[in-house]
Length: 222
Length: 320
Image 1 (cartoon, rainbow over the protein chains, first blue to last red):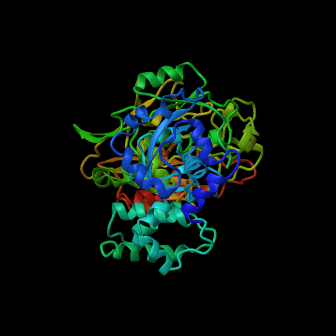
Image 2 (cartoon, each protein chain N blue to C red):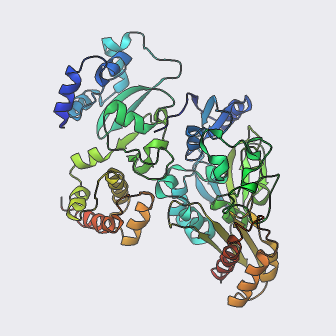
């Protein structure tokens, strides 16, 4: 489903849609769909807090329960403000509230599989073990953002068939991208070491190192 | 995915503020979160905390610096930053290697050094979700592993009626490197830092917080090493690991995952001290290290003894 279709579906869905829920919370500035992020980001990039104060919607009493906190974060270049419960994980926020569904839940939140990996402030982290309320000011990148930016890692994964069912792939892609951000010319040993925390049930492990090395070779060309 | 039950989350601004919240009770300290958040999600402990105190928001605790011959590592330094630090890689080899072999890259990016040394045990009775085994480690009266499945448990007997092992990789390295651990109350020798506690693994009081790790620079000619035995290269906790620092007539050797706390192999130290390191002397020291081993009745964890012996031998050979 394209982002436009997703937005349309949310707009016409009766009852409590994700969008109406967020509006009720009275705190959302960024729109959940990617399509409108660029415009919104442009508006609030200078000072999201000042914008919030000026907006008439924001002056109404905020419906925050005693444990909800407000966080500002950047996801894939879009700026978001959310009221989050303190027991939400970053993965819940990304998937259930914003709609970036690439961080997967495989091991059930034990930090054992790496399929919920996102890049936060340059580090590959497990979004299931990160509290959303601690992400204030964070810059988060998910596999959607890496694909949208046409990072060479995506084409390299396709060229090398480095997946079968694809469930674990977003985690691998985020981990590999974080490695390439840190180390432009990794060796095969570096790649194997960096991907050591990602599990793949289809066992395509041997195809990941060539894919990441191909992406590293193509980094400057794109 | 199982979600966390409700808790109140506080971003501490100072160590004192965090300590005062912990002192009030029903609170837990959170730094990297890779241990405590998983324990909370699966409700392995009898009492769910009401307050989670975030220590990551305390400024100025994430430094690595060498001052007058002592390496000082702030409590909030991530494991991966230790792995990548050139000073540690060059001079404190055992710590660099131990940090590198800890868990997975993601967990090293999140987890802190203080959290790694304060982690709770991995005993499967202790860790079973929903507190289904109210064992001695949780304040109960029985150690279920003693009568049950104990193939990964202590080969040196129980400590205060608990045979779970300490699963930290950096702990033996810190003991071998003769480190000191600074808290908001005192300075503790690494060797005296761990103990069977309910439910923790350290001697820390409820409102005590690790602030710094101090490691004296090894004298010239003194070498250190760390070796880990686990099923997989990444992610796994150790089955047995061993760190050694040998040279200049001294030897410090520490095994872990063989006892309730890091097990300093003094018999092996005496066997290798001042001797030339070679295959036979290392082998003899390895045999000395496990001479006091006492596997559980039924010998279900007896297989760990030759592994511990070999880990000691190889860590000594790596210091030659």
